[in-house]
Image (tube, rainbow, N blue to C red):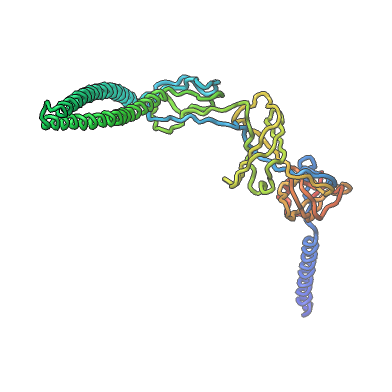
Length: 417
């Protein structure tokens, strides 16, 4: 009969333990091998990225901004009085002259005030004429009275002399002589007083006529003002140019000071550029500029810059120094570049997507032999519109990718296909 061996179960258990250990060891080794492998290198189509070569030489620093052509001189035509728009004679786009009638306003109250001022002026002028006649008549009466007193004084003087002679001859009493002399003296005093009154009367007449003339002049000025206000209801251009804007409509009620029209000089334009405030710090008056109207490029020069920034931009005025291309008109959108300086004998390359001045960025340097690009750190310097200075990290002839490579931030190297 068979006798079971006691070691058979032990051998079997040991076999399974060793087998499991071997499997675990293999799995561990495979895991470590996989973990030690580098991630796959991503492939980038060469035609889908922008590659530029580092150069040494002169770099033109520029800043660029969008803007529009605007007239150098703009005339805003305001309403001088309240009124209602009765009719509009000329629309935007028409060429106008100084006396061109733009529109007609109405204001019945103003017209009534002008008529009332006219009647007041006529009444004052009639009153002045009446006063002059009355004063002249009074003066003539006083002159007649003065002449009569002068005659009476002369007769009294003769009578007094006559009585004096008769007294000396003993033909008349002395009392009669004294009476005649007193009467002559009385006429002499009255004549003197009347003569003074006549002289003073001339000054009085002049003063009264001057006062009346002032009143007439005051009413005449008021009438002229009222008439000018009524005449201003016929709104005229006041200058030569092109009617750029008429921001009112027929029937609209207007207050004094409301803008009725905008007149510009289309042959005298300048460019207004909006430059980011971070780039405007180096702009100076007199720097050269070029304005692209999309139908031609015009040279220019910076003539003004706003002292403050609005919405992150600074407004720069550029005077145009070349002939305007056909189609140039106010409010035409333009691109402008302003020349800041020329940097000589420096390393530079095309401006990367995220290239900021005086910063350190990571760029992919191209290896033409292996068709790969490796990430490196590059220190940037001064910046222009399309180029940027290389301070450290690259040398002449190196090629770098300028396109946005943010999707490959996790990879130190890419393959170019």
